[in-house]
Length: 106
Image 1 (tube, rainbow, N blue to C red):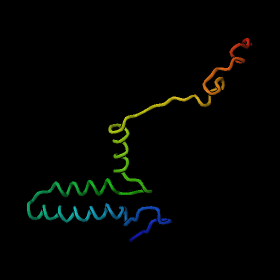
Image 2 (cartoon, helix red, strand yellow; image 1 turned 30 degrees about the vertical axis):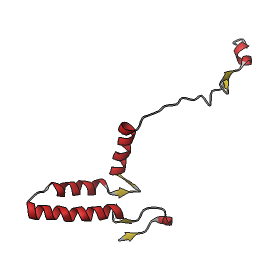
Image 3 (cartoon, rainbow, N blue to C red; image 1 turned 90 degrees about the horizontal axis):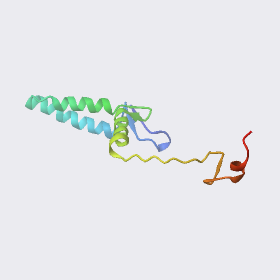
């Protein structure tokens, strides 16, 4: 079942995968079957199964996307924190008002 993207903006999907991921899975599965039958070597089949699981899409998001974004956030990009007081009532453009400063408490 081929589902074309809504409003021609989303990526095309077939079953639970994008077409790009499905093409990678088919190619890797063929190589994995050849390695099992000719060499008796099973790790490529395990990698194909793991990749297939990680790239399943549900509501335009996959486990692979989550892992990629988490690695970028925690490991690969420098985090910068900028503190701004845009909603402070006692400050106007970074200067303390003299009227509020000199008024007696009460």
